[in-house]
Length: 130
Image (tube, rainbow, N blue to C red; front, side, top):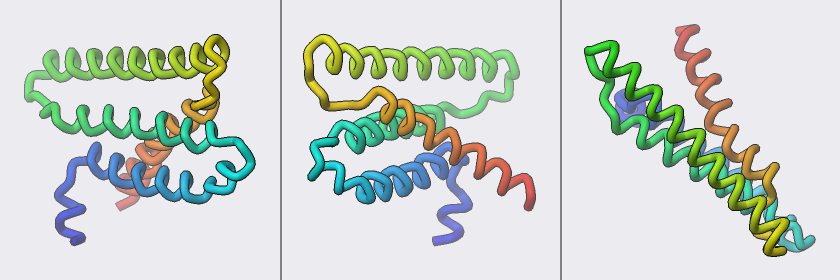
């Protein structure tokens, strides 16, 4: 199992740990369902899943040996990432404020989106120490 984990790319390790953390957080927020605050765990799940999907797609793109090509791929992925999360936040806000559908909390979506980024920072720091 350890060898399998060590052979994973950093993007897949981030996605795996993010999935574990987000699942645990949503399970810890089960009491919110009883107090009519369902939009908080749903928002965290939405933001986290979107970010995990983006990390998986980032892992699918092989890093090119050509530095210009790698830079172009990185720039495209950053732009796609910002557009996707911007679209998700816009959709959540529009549903919440214009349609009255309280399915996703905008702040929870943002928090869920930031979980994989924090895990990325932690994994990079842990790898640097070794």
